[in-house]
Amino acid sequence: MSDKQKSITDSNLTASKPLLLHRRPDSLRIITKRLITQFVGQFAIVGFIALVLMAVALFFMLIRMSQLDMNRSFTSSGLQLLVDSLEIKSGQITFDPKLLTEVKESGGWLQTLDERGNVTSSHYTPVDVPNHYNAGELAAIWSRKRPFPYSLYIWIESKDGVDYTLLYGTQDTGHLLAQKAAESALITDRTIQLPNNLEHEIRESGGWLQLLDGDMKELASLGKSEGAPSSYSVQDFILRSEYADRYAAKLSSFFDERTAQTWVLHMPLPASSHKGLFGSIQSVMIFGFAGLLAVVLLVFIILAFVYAHRFGTPILHMMDWLQHLANDDYKEPTDRKGRPRSIHKDQKLKRRYRLFTEIFISLSRLSDTLKRNEDMRIRLERTREEWIAGVTHDLKTPLSSIIGYAHMLEADDYEWTREEVREFAAIMKEKASYMDAMIGDLSITYRLKNEAQPLSFERVEMNAFIERAIIRLLQDPRLSAANVALTRMDQELYYPIDPGWFNRIIDNIVANAVLHNPPGTAVRISLSTQDDQGFVILVSDNGQGMDEATAELLFERYFRGTNTEENDQGTGLGLAIAKQLVLTHGGTIEVQSAYGAGTVIRMAFPPK
Image 1 (tube, rainbow, N blue to C red):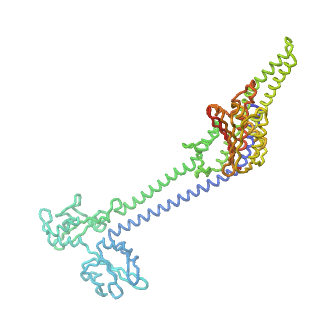
Image 2 (cartoon, one colour; image 1 turned 180 degrees about the vertical axis):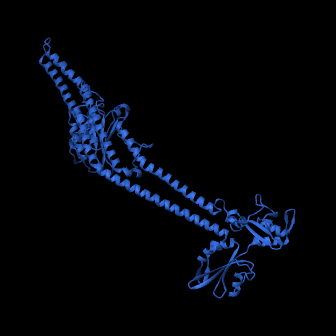
Image 3 (tube, one colour; image 1 turned 180 degrees about the horizontal axis):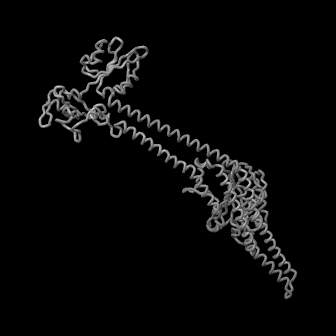
């Protein structure tokens, strides 16, 4: 690397460092503040989610336990809820329809009484239940001093200054069936025999019958379930009678005072009162807390993956990017589609990378600076090598000719005439002029390619400008017989160009079309406008054309080489200079050609 290149590269790197160092403290404070905000916000969200999950779990357990309690005994919890749901609408008493359904499923009935004992509303009430009660009658029924075929529960509630009496009655079907069995059963070989209709009713209900002696041991049974107990302790019998949900069966009994025997009817609970894992309060609590723990654990696992993805992915990407920079790869690492991982199609940072925005900006600037310095170093190195190779190649032949003629003039073996000396001098002058033109063209291409050639733009009417350029070009004696025609645009078009260098474009392109085709070749130049006042220049000829390989290298420097033995040869850089000037003006240039079909060069300049 030359000292000049090294100084340029070092100066760029030095210029980039103060910018990054100056931004570093502010960037760190911003990122620290953003991280604190993110973590505090995330933990607040996690805490809120945990509280919500706990509330949902507790609500579920309370609802389910209340449902189990109502299924076991509607009077213990459902009756209170039913009273709380009492409302007066348009003078009518209403209850929660769901609770009324529970009344029906529990086999009960419901009545409300006003202050005079009249029934004001009735739900599922049997026909043998009165629709009016006086105070003494109701008190006798309540104190069981008067026979009543139902178990009765009384609740008094005050609504809007009016006292309402709620009557809830239930009939213990199991008790009645057990009593009927005691009155009609025959015992044979530890087997209970019943009338067909009574046995059918018990079996239809899914129940089975037991006869126990005074010690609560089985004497006989009917339809006994497998694994059912054959004897009971006092505590066991009471628990089975009061907490049917624990045993998934309701135990109803009738004590025969004459024989001191107990008739027991076991009936399965309704399907709604015993559902698998949630059929008891213990199971509800166990699975409720287990479910809460599982969901909370799942939430934390998900959050762990989210945090790893949100914070880990950008950090790993930055480490990968730095590794690429260390390996002289100045592009951001890309995904499978070849796009930078941190950037959307709209060139904005992806959401998970925005937390480290300042770091990614610094990395991007560092990559751009390093790449720009590397490109400059390579460009300078390549330009230097091309300069040396080009000058060596293109100046060797004319210089050899000059040296040869100089040796001939210097030799003492010959005496050259004045005409011969003049001829030699003319050839040497021609070769020297060629070398001077070559050096000038090389200098121009070097400056244009490295953007070191400043242009001075001014708005020029293009029809008149190109027409004058062609007229001036045809005044060259070598081109005076050329068949060149111009087709102007339909309207005037003013466009910003550097007149001197744009004139060089026209000269090089048109002269190349005339000089490198047979005499009489027609060269046509046509101008046309593009949308929003851009324009196109087409230079076409009907000459000999060229093959595809030649067309691809047409605008490359040194492609033709030099052959100063022919007068129509230039420096070999005319089209390369034309291309660089077109690009410098913001345009594009392309060629289409084929043997025997002529050549078309198209130059397009965008709107400005």
